[in-house]
Image (cartoon, rainbow, N blue to C red):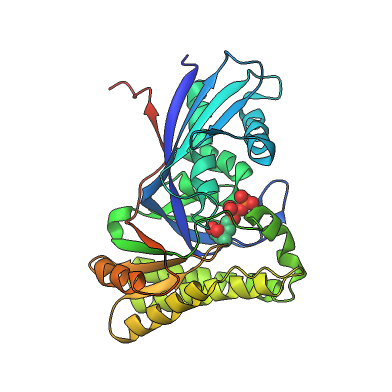
Length: 320
Ligand code: DP6
C-alpha cells in the first residue's frame, strides 16, 4: 500500500451557480449547479501519511496555518478517521489563490483523490466527488471531467469536454485574497430576500442550460448564464451584511462582453465570488475576447482555458 500519492484536479467555472446550502455542515446545496472544468488551471497535491507527529500543510511553497490548515486536517479526518496517521500535504496551484478563481474546488478535489490513493482506498468517481464536496461544495464538480452537474451528494459528467469546445477567458481585475470567502457567503445567502426566488427559479435555469449544452446553442447559453450570475450577485449584494465583489474593472468587462456579443462574437460573462470575470466563448473567439479585455482599464491580466478532464492520480502511476 503506497503511503504517498499525488493527484491533479482542475478548477471549474459554474454556468449555473451554487450559492447557499440546505445543510451547511454537509455542504448539501440549496440548488443544483452546472460547470465545466478548466484544463489549464489546476492544483497538484501530494499527501504522504506517516513520518510526522501532526499534519503539516504546505500551500504554494509556504506552510499553511490557521483556518486553511485546519480545513485540510478536518477533511483528512473524514478519509483516514480521526485516529488515522498524520500527513504531510503539499499543494501547488498554477493560478492565483483567493481571487474568485475557485482554488478550493481544485484543492479539495485533488486532496480527496490523493489522500484516498495514498491510503489505498478504492473509491468510485461518485464517492470521491461526494468526499470532495465535504471540503468545498464546488470541489464535487472538479472530480468528474468535462461538463458537470451537481444536485445532491455528488456531481456527474453531463457531456465530455469534446462535446462543445468552449473557452473561458478570465479577466483578472484583482488577484489578492477576497475579504469574504465563499463559506461565509453561503451562510449569508438566506439573509437576502432574493435568495428564495433565486432558488425557486433554479430548475428553469438548470433546464435551459442543459438544453443549451445539449444543442450547442450559444445564444441560449449566453442568456441563461448571464442571468444566473446576475441573480447570484443580486443575492450577494442584498445579503445582510451586503457582499459587493464588483470593482470598476468588473463592470467594464461586463459592458465589453455585451458589446462584443452585439457585434457577433459568441461570448458571455459569468462571475464567481470575486471581482474577476469569466468570459465564456466558443473556440476561435478567445483571441478577440482576450485582446478586448486586455485593453480595458482595471484589467490586470487574462487567463485562458479550454475544458478539462477529471481529477486523477498522477503519482504513483497506475500499472498498465
Ligand atoms: C460563487 O465551493 O467555494 O463559486 O463550499 O464554502 O468551499 P465552499 O464554497 P465554494 O462556493 C462556490 C461558489 C461560487 C459558485 C459556484 O462555483 O457554483
